Length: 214
Ligand SMILES: *Cc1c(COP(=O)(O)O)cnc(C)c1O
Image (cartoon, rainbow, N blue to C red; front, side, top):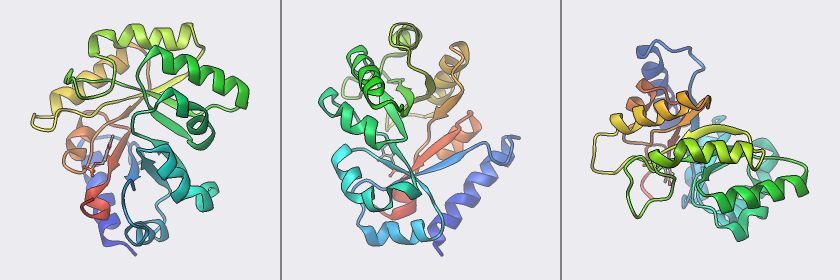
C-alpha cells in the first residue's frame, strides 16, 4: 500500500473526469530519479509499473533487476554518445530535441532491430537553459524526424518555465501536436499535473509528490 500513490491516482482520476475525458486517458509516469529504493519500493509494490528517469546510467543501475516488469522512460537530456545505451534500455525516450540525435537514434534503432517510442521535447518557454526545440522549429523538426530519418514520433513533451502559469505552455504543446498529427502529450509534474490533464496530457510525470523531496 502506498498512500502517496493512492492519492496521486485519485487526483488524476478526478482531473480526468472533470475534463470529460475517458477514464484511461492519462498514464502516470512515476519519476524515480535520485530517490532511494526505500521510497520507490512501496510504490512499485503497490503496482506502479511505469517509471521515468533522467540519466541513462542511474536508470540502468536501478532498474536492471526489474527491467522486464516495468515500462521505463527517459525524461532527461540524452547525449549522442549515450544513444546506443538509451535505445537499448528505454521503452520510451521523451527528449528527442535535435537533428544529430535523430540521426544517431535512427542508426542505433537500425542496428538494434528494436525502437524505443519517441517524444520530441519542445522548449515552450524558449528558456536558454532548457533543452528542446523551440515552438517555431517544432513542425520542421517533426517532419525531418519522420521524413529524413524514418522515425515514428509518438508524442511531444514539455517542461514549462517554473515561475509562470503552465496552462498556456500546455495548450501550445497540444496545438503543435494536433497540427502535426502527433497523438500523445507528456506534460504536467507534481505541481501542475491537474492543469496539464485539463489541457490534454496523455501522461504526467510525477516525482516529489509521489516519493518525497529529492
Ligand atoms: C524531475 C522531473 C520531473 C518530476 O518533477 P516533480 O516536480 O518532482 O514531480 C518531471 N519531468 C522531468 C523532465 C523531470 O526532470
